Length: 173
Image (cartoon, rainbow, N blue to C red; front, side, top):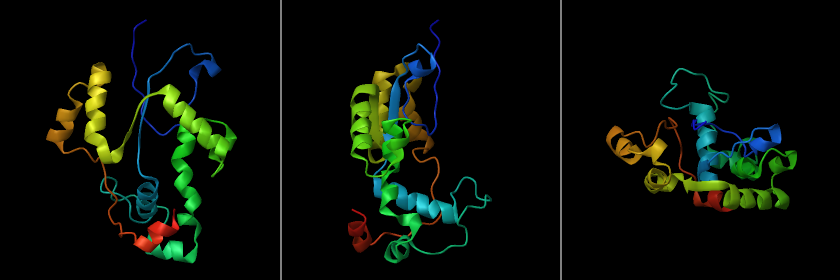
């Protein structure tokens, strides 16, 4: 049959044939600069976002800044957490989640180049959407216009986020 489905969510790359599904999906992804993503997640756990404003977050009440966390060497800002986007391209093997694994990084790069139709970066969202409109018009026709007119280029924002110092940025590299 010629049916189409769109799946959205956080899941690692997988080959559906491994579970007996003879379908070749189109993989696309959108990634963020690792430090920006980690800092945003750090503050999200403390302050939440502007969508689910009444939801209590895991670290609510903790006012430690990201800079202070890095200075104190706490686990929430461990540089190993910069790795978190790699496993989503690497796949479902346990070693994909091993921060710093050369094998996992190589596998992630291989999958990105050979299995994904398109991978964009959040800093270039408009361009990403324009390319999607051209490559997959059935799903994305009008998407750029929708983003421009709706103001929904950011679905949600962390309610509070302190700027990260140059010193911290340098330490996280």
